[in-house]
Every structure is written in C-alpha cells, then in structure tokens.
Length: 335
Image 1 (cartoon, helix red, strand yellow):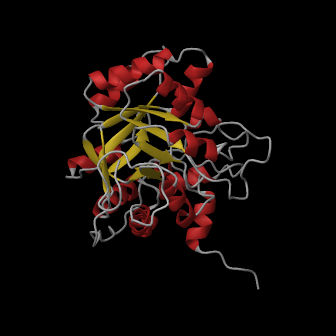
Image 2 (tube, helix red, strand yellow):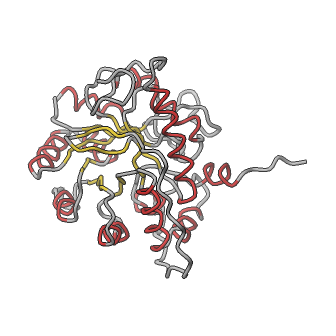
C-alpha cells in the first residue's frame, strides 16, 4: 500500500516560503485579483500560553515572526508554476485577515512583507483593532533612490530592512555604501533598521563597516532535504531556486561573532524542511528570532512547537553557544 502523505506534509513540501522575492524577478505573472468567496469566519481562540519575546531597537517582538510570502504568492516552488496562483487563490483578502487575527491571538506580534506588494489586508487588520507590527522590506526605487523607505514610514512600518537581493546587488556592483545610507535614513526616521541577506558576505561587510543596524535578517537552513544543493553548488541563492543558505556552518560560525539580534529566515527551505527539524536547528545554532510563512491552519501547531523548542534552547541543558540578543530569555543565560 502506498504511504499516505498528511495534509501538513504535502503542503509544506510544496508551498511554504518565508521571505519575499518579487514575482517580476522570477519571470512569473502576478495572479489576477480574486473576489473572496463568502465564508463563515473561523473562531479565533487565544493561546493558553504566551509566545516568548525579545527586543530589537528597543521594541518587543515575538520570537516567531510571520512571513508574508504565502500572502504575496511567492512560492519558490521550483518548476511547479501553478503554485503561486494556488496560494493567492487560497489566501483571499478575507482569509488573510482571518490569518492575521489567528496569528495575533496565538501571540505572534509581527509580520514581514515587501513594501511594494499589496498590504491592504494588514492595514484593514489595524483598522479593525489589530496590533500586528510590520517589518518592511525595501529596495532602491527605479531611479536608484530611497522612496520605498519613505513609503514604509508613511504606511506604518515598525521596522524596515534592506531586502537581501538588493543588498547583494549593491555589494556585487561596488555600491555597498548605499546600504549604509539606507540604514542611516531608516534610523533618521525613528524606525528599527536592519539588513537582509541570502549571501553571508553582506553581513560580513556590514560588520566591517560597523553599520548601526538594529538587526540582521539572514537565511539559515540545513541541507537535509531532497533538493538541497549538491557538492560544488555554492550560489547564495540556489541556481535552481532550491537553496538560500549555501554554507550553513559558515553562517553559524560568523553569526557567533555578531552582537546584534538575528532574524533567521528561509528556515524551512521554502517548505522542504519540516518545522520540527527547522525550529530547533535555527534556535540551537544562534538565531534570536525565526521568520516563518504559515497558512492559517498551521499557525497554532507552529506556535506550540516554537514554545517547546525555545524552552529547550533556553534551559540549563541547552547546547546553544551564541548568547541571546535582545531581552534576556525567561530561563537560561541571556545575552
């Protein structure tokens, strides 16, 4: 008898993602807007336990931050071209608002999306009394300017970070000083400032330049999955859209020297690694926060798992070697 695959296993192996890369960069058309089908709103139950938190830039955030890829339709689904449309058709406006409410009820206090994607559902969530904080990805605009930073400020961002692709492009083009200028501008707007990266060289250069960042957002996952890069494949972003952390041990070693909060993203390798493996891998190896894309029906399970993993990673028996940055954890040694 063929082995049955659970709903969770099927979807996480083909749909999940955790940080945004614009569809235009992948050569895929944006899905046509869909009219949400009327449906009964799911009951939102508050979590019986709180989700651990930490601080960045003087503000407190849950140790689990919601990724926005599943809302934007960025699936990283390799050659399965239909998946982005499937994600967008599932995540109607009504479903996204319901998902935000569910995440907040479970203790998730922040979400990360690209400033130029459609974020109206988040704004509607705020209008309805929601408190979800917003981490915003920004790039240089078409004229090489910083207008996206001002847009993020005007629309209510709590934290703003340079998109990983953008930072890598400026590094490769010999224009890395612009990353520093973007960080300075974000700080001048009284927002939490960060830099994102798939390529570890970006973080290395930021540290060399002593940029005054409040956090780094770096891809981090093991190679324990079927489509992981093969020996010799060292691209920072997999050549076949199959990898976002080419050398995880190098990340572990370097981030151990970095005294800034680290948000690890792409920890599920776009759904190829199950949370039960990805969460402990991230927290035990130094991440202070994890950014995770979740469908509505995955949130409660993932939050429960995150609480257990965090408790183990902050216990006296924890094998974590990097100090915790931000607020000291409830148990164990803090940084």
